[in-house]
Length: 352
Image 1 (cartoon, one colour):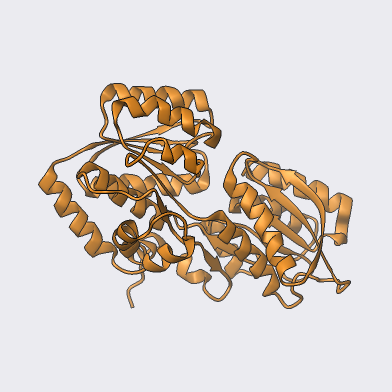
Image 2 (tube, rainbow, N blue to C red):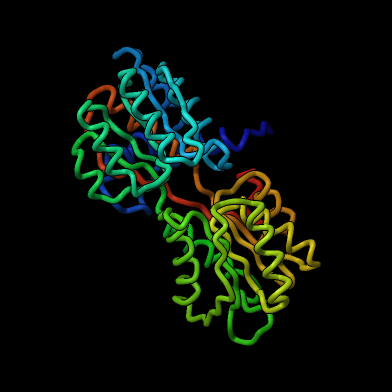
């Protein structure tokens, strides 16, 4: 039996969503698109390539908030590949997590006269300024990964859209992963789930929603929760490792669950958990988001309770299709959503 790579597997299960979802999805139901995004990668890519070839090439500028981000490393590689398959010229810039740097890069792209800008903003609070800078040039914008306010999209009608995943869903799935454990998160049986939270960028809506909805899932299931501490670790593995080590030293066995807004922080937390002599699945639970390869392997090995797939392939496919539609003058909706997927010991091998 021939094995396929994780990227090929996800691409094969995503691209129907690029075509069907982009033509059928309006503005806000995140649960419908990824279920649509489930089957036709090669045929949709072939169709898109043929259309692009018929209409000529295009120059696409891509602004990524920070190349050092693990998830965005996957995402930008997907974008470069898929846009290249359409015959487009693609330039990708590293914002280095500095909005001023990214703003200068956008100005450079405007001077070069690119056909479409794909922007993963450093600060979502700067999204309106970004639109105000670009709109006089009439260049379409595809915002990705970091959701701007709807008013931002409304201010540039028919020329601005957002492609992403609803972070409320990822937080909910984290809570459900804990509820699915043997103890439903209450390892010591005292009737309360006691946890710490490792949070991402406080300005990022994904961090906010994952923090809120992971706990909401527990409370909606009738569980009593106790937050010992929330740590601001800004998506960073090293910061999370340090904070979780401090938390374990301070709170010890009181900590039953470690929630992390992404897998990088979860992997840092895992290092400290194991160094402290704790065992995931036995006396502590640990969940993340992104389904990075190392985290998925940890789930398979029983060293993480679970993670949540943030589908870089599905999102990059949808962003590529939105870009193609702008290039070819087709109508584009404001929002395109791609579902998250719970990754457990039972299905983790599919995502490795």
